[in-house]
Length: 116
Image (tube, rainbow, N blue to C red; front, side):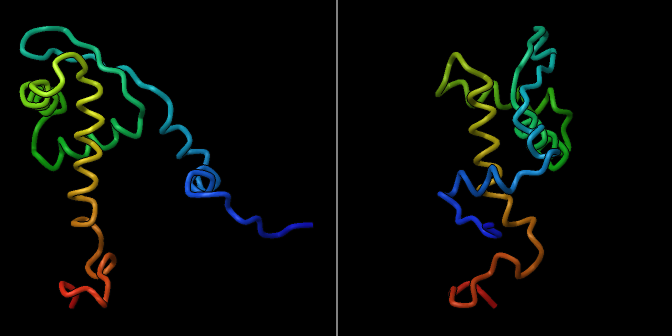
């Protein structure tokens, strides 16, 4: 009987590490908004909505106003797909701000010139 199975790779490890609650983050969720006076629905996976909710809170904006700002800025590069723009903005937000929210010293490398 095997007690420890070696992971086949990063994705295998991530999926094996998911709890039942985390698996629900893959479920698409549709939300409706009025953006610049027009009714709009956006479908994103719950994981992205969690990030958008956090971004809106950090910015002191309601979610529809945050999405309007993305609509006004991001669609210059991608004129058709608001959902795609929102997903990219979420990834950028996590890449830029996730380490800033980590407890002091949690992401520091003692060999790094910035550490300490």
